[in-house]
Length: 326
Ligand code: ACO
Image (cartoon, protein in one colour):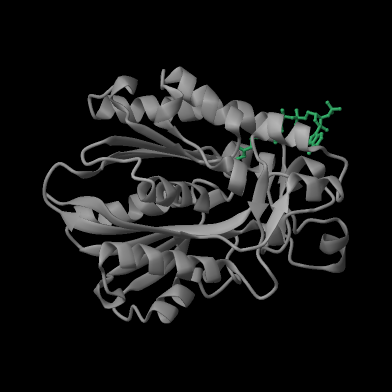
């Protein structure tokens, strides 16, 4: 039986930094409010000319280099994103071309901030089925292009960047143990960009009514997130006959420090077992878990055979969890 082992990680964020102090000059907010309510201190924002495939490509190069994998070895490239360069073609096809990964099938997948976990699950399924040997899974976003810098309830949250992993088909006990995905479309209204699609194409009216920006009922999303993430994590542990005590590191979607703290508390995890980088990047949606995974990996926070829990929550609403034996 094959398992998917992560043999390389990579990440990339734009150079430009937007601090809480900068945001104080744009909207009625304060560094103190943002820090205490979210844990975010600064976020990276794309420059003119940069877009989602810019960061996806750079993250992919870093991951492939660590994996010692040549682009021609890749069977598939999957990009989790809700902020593609354009409606078509996919970010994955831009990345495939720039990498010269000529053998790889390439497509994007949209599942809000849970996009990376969904993409990881699809990649893992191809490997478990014995169909593919090497798959590049990327989470990449340029949410600053869809952020309303007149709306203080959302503009303080989001940042840009990408993370990537190379999955390799391997025998043995190490690798992705299981993934668990969920969705509830009853809550589409809680978090959305309503304009620019086939329902409300771009028009003077859609622009004037700011429908091309993210709208979120953060408080409602927060409450559902904590409950759903706990359930997903417990399901993943139970499925593998593990408990919270077996987890060596939690790498959670970095949306809000209070959500991560609540999950860690419910799983009885010591703070040392919780990876955090939200203060420097904010919520980078699909990119947040693979960026965190890459930083944790390069800081040697994971040892061979460690149990790693990933969890994410986002627009849809969607959520999920994955357990990895590193
Ligand atoms: N600065 C100052 N005050 C603010 C700001 C701000 N930036 N934003 C909101 N406030 C005010 C509100 O207006 C409100 O004031 P009022 O009481 O006078 O009406 C007060 O602060 C409290 O607002 P809440 O929305 O209740 O604040 P909350 O504690 O819920 O924090 C937050 C808001 C940070 C958005 C939180 O709800 C959250 O993180 N939600 C979850 C987000 C999430 O996980 N999303 C999923 C992933 S995103 C994706 O898929 C793209």
